[in-house]
Image (cartoon, rainbow, N blue to C red; front, side):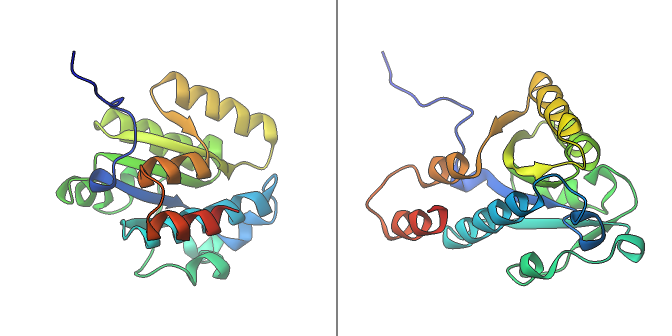
Length: 186
């Protein structure tokens, strides 16, 4: 019998991070917003250590403002602007993911029950494996957040945590990447 790994385990060669709409004008009213920012920063730093692609969006930036500075300061490149709740309508983002041979996404951002949920469902509909970092997403109300996690999971999303996703991508300990990411998650 051949020994194999579970197909849903994240793989470096096919994974990207997608940060959805962590913008100042809405962040202040988000339940446990400090947790969302802290864990999003861990994901960004971990993905940078592993040299993995990172994408981020902004919902109606004219009204909601830009991505919060503490996060945008860690990111290279420009936000993909959108008017739709789902990132499905964020320019050619989905096509860019396909073109870069991204098959797995770690998703974080706000709000769990609106932009995150609609994006996750649309990503799944387009054949992506989606891993929602439950500790890096939230909503204004906790009930909306919990309900969204349940619904996304029911429809095929893997619900995980920041640390779990990062260690899946690392795969092994004892490397320089492992040491760097271990410091980030502590």
